[in-house]
Length: 177
Image 1 (cartoon, rainbow, N blue to C red):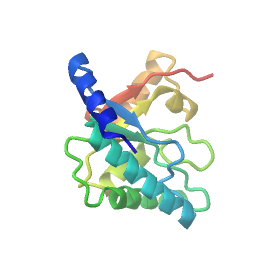
Image 2: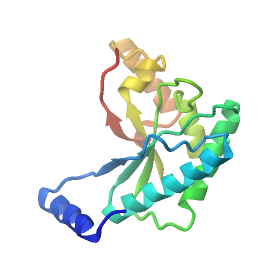
Image 3: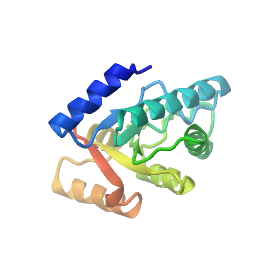
Image 4: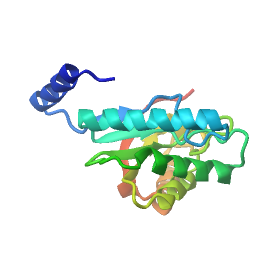
């Protein structure tokens, strides 16, 4: 839980430093696509807590990975993730907070390694303020070779045709071996 004094200090420091936008990354243990009922319920509760903290802090964005569909097919994982987003947000006043779905590397049975997945999640939750956090290392590992201009142009074309460039609200520039 965030202590009121800590929240006040954070907000005061943010105003003083003009830090903007503020992006919070969700706990990596949250799995909004889990096929296991107990893990799914814990993930939904944890994600809601992350949302509540981001709202209290006045964050602009909350980044979350869509999760792993291990034990289910990809389509079921996407449907579960969309439902989890809706359930977790139910009754919350998100204000200006936007939830950013981060693309994944596609390891195991993680969803989100294709931008079509992120588009499908956004389409399934039209009443939620969703966007995308583009992670360069995850994209590279998922097969988008962005080391040269041709590969980058191909990826940009894919993004334009799926989630749209206007929905990329954050870029996590990092490296991949």
